[in-house]
Image 1 (cartoon, chains in turn brown, purple):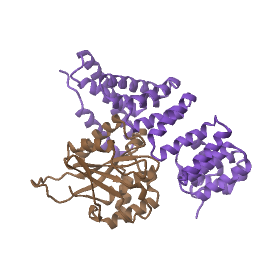
Image 2 (cartoon, chains in turn orange, purple; image 1 turned 180 degrees about the vertical axis):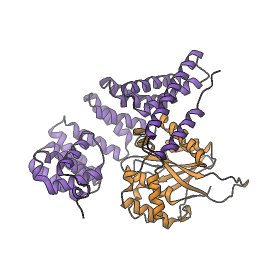
Image 3 (cartoon, rainbow over the protein chains, first blue to last red; image 1 turned 30 degrees about the vertical axis):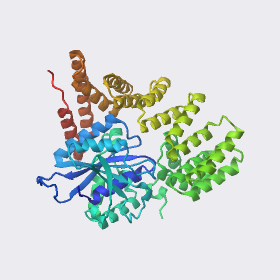
Image 4 (cartoon, one colour; image 1 turned 60 degrees about the horizontal axis):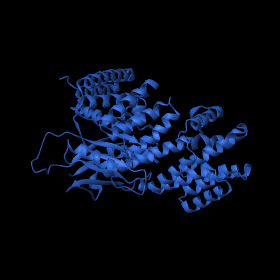
Length: 204
Length: 297
């Protein structure tokens, strides 16, 4: 499946990674639900318009993950979104392969969206300037997760994504990024991150 | 560039108190610690009295986290001057080597400390941290188990071990570690709740029921623990939905789940007060709870 990341989706993934450099982090990718269903599956690219940062630290426990998936699913239905993928940055910066947790969550997402992708963030290449895309995109092909080459085609507008992400990293916006863990610590923390979304819009 | 105290109109006492709070809570907000600590040290060191040494230590570790080797070295040198033979300071030297990824040198350094003082727990734990940093989980687990045989009361170590086991998906052993922690800290709601999460993840009816009980216990200890509340809801719902349970168990769990759902809704309504934008969360929660409602036969 050809997916494209918007600036908002990409930058929030990287902000989440930057906020917890010493932890593994993960989250979900969402796209707008389209009514058209092309039989041959070769429609336009699926545009990941947003991401929802989920957890940091211990990712391998089930109950809160289930809560998050169900809650975010409800939220998606309200907003005509669908969960199309999962992102993760590992604790070990030198290892950016999808592990068991990633595969399990992606399998769960695939029940609802059969071309779900895993996006692994390569935190070893995380820089303030964001001069190159630092994600790996994995598709489920023949029962295995295969890495595909990531070019600027994977972005709706790479230059914009780069500029915005870099600006927000330099401005330390990640300090205000809310993930689902933060939300569970204090329900007033909004995991849709309206403030950051607004900053992204202002920079567009 | 404006100083922090100018930008935020805080005095040096507030900055010192903030650092103390972060020390007590063991926060890893290293960038903030560096910002506050660096200014405190450079502008107000004379006013800090003996606090300055522990601040140097705190700021040094935070500086390592932020790749501020210049600042880390400054702090380290001050500490070395003041405490020339201290093992505690030697541990900081080792940590700096770790930050520079000079793991072999760091290990030699810690071994030297252990030669002089075989009971030095800090050096042993740093060696285990190096194994974790290198991705050597199996060795880290083994070393940590050996360490705990000797230092059975070290809670930080039990917690670290539970994390390592969870990352390896060895939930049974993670549960054991959390059981140790619950025994020695019966009033700690976080350990109860984490134990329940591990049991839930392990799966199976027995574990689900245990999970539900421990989520409930965590709530008794702290009725604002949202994870425990959600956990109680999820485990009770799953038990009630299972075809293998008796009618009574089903009925009881539907009651527990309904109670939890009401509490969850209430918590969201209270959180959403005064914040119009949060409405989507409330609605999503209501829908989620509705979608999971179990029908009575």
